[in-house]
Image (cartoon, rainbow, N blue to C red):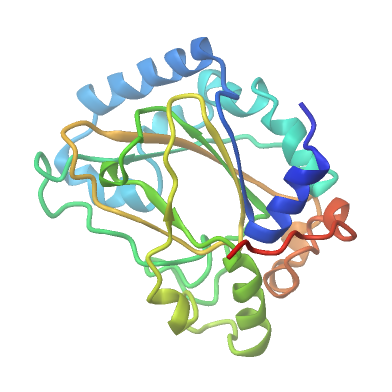
Length: 254
């Protein structure tokens, strides 16, 4: 279950790794059942804007069934391979991209951003950063029009340079102008696939033009020392990743 040397090198280059089918079907089925019940019985259209900024099904955030998608899938070991050590994860975030035709205008495309930095709904001087994003696919995301997350491979390196050289705490810009113009690579997958993404990888989320919800469970994983050095970690992409310090990154293929 450990990461191979090639996977570590790829993560260092791209800031992203995908493990297909890592979450067992029974774990996925239990989580989907709970989320679907909340979506159909508890959610109203008025909830969607706030849920899109924070989490859908907030009552499930600390449920064992949701947390097992991280703790019982091998994802914890992969996180440790990257970070060396990881603080305990006690909550999950459920993100659903609702069908645009069913809820028109309530969930516009998200701007390119790095999580927890210059959030439009927060004080721009407040940082809510972490080290590694782990995402578990809980619905069919085989088409980019499902409301797929789009990420910029290698963008973690460009963002670290921007944070070090051009950005300062309190700025409202979330990413560098040239990155803001990028569309990114869609993350496509099937239920049970797991995404590991460096916190500094800029990403956006498209509208869902399909007739069914797109569902992901996310876990924000931090190195135990991250909270005491958030600014430094924005400027040094490997500060929270000591096992990768000496790993050579492969070059991009033309």
